[in-house]
Image (cartoon, rainbow, N blue to C red):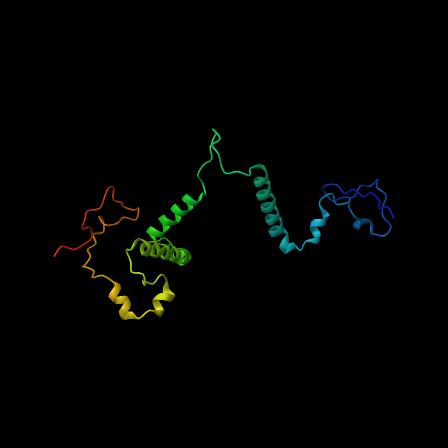
Length: 183
């Protein structure tokens, strides 16, 4: 059966010239057909906004990578060194040196430290049986590990002078006995 055209005005008053549908009360006549995306009503209302946002992000990401499959470039068509391996390593090395947010990035700092220990072993700066990670350290005899550690002199720390984590920073080379207390 064809729906009768019952157009409601903006005030909600039915058009007096329209033919009424005999199945409904005169004051409860249905309005015009919904002209929007009716399929969206089939998505549960709690998932509509998240589904819309995820769909938008998916389409935007894929559209961007379809149109621009290369890295960022300058006006002279030279690739900018953003997110190259060297830049990413430099960023993580900076965070490692500053020890920023060890709760979130501690596992990454541990990997960086293991790589540093392996490199020092290859260069001969550390003994071959020096532990690379916590598991190897726990399996090692404490007396053997203590024997590997060189004698450390008492260190001094001057708050305004000795910070080299980017806050104060020291331009140039450090003195030969920097941080070692005079006796």
